[in-house]
Length: 120
Length: 107
Image 1: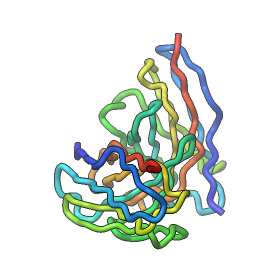
Image 2: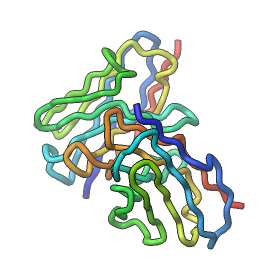
Image 3: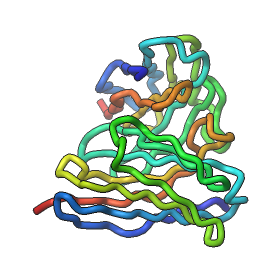
């Protein structure tokens, strides 16, 4: 069955970068886009961006302009999300999620989440 | 950005009740709306996509309706497992946006 397995929790200092991985299994990796969503403690869900695992093309929310980089490694069925210039407000659980369509649909499978804590 | 507004923010109900959650978009999103259920410490779970299509494996007591800018999620007979937080999400236009959530509590 479909699984998205994310890398483990991270603690970072302000100004640093974090790189989170999301390894897919149980389906054809190149056929489904992947989204990134984050959730600050006690808060709602915030869409960060989307990547085409096959072509590598991306789109992201303006809130993260210049700070987010999404990449893909088809050889390992893994997508990565790097967030740079971290600040305390970036403390959140970060999720990858599969698009059930072809980049324009709802999210049918989610990773388990990766907690990123930004603290000096 | 398209704003998604859910109401109510908190809903108290009992097992067996029928409940409805409303989601309003700041502009038309046609039928490109999803509903998710989230429990503490867990990832969201897709319940409804394209406003009214039930995701595979989701109990039929969940239903969605609406189009344009106004949508509802209904649960016909609440079960103990249904007490959670519910989010609507538009996927008509980037950036995709979520409602602020509705916490469904046991009365």
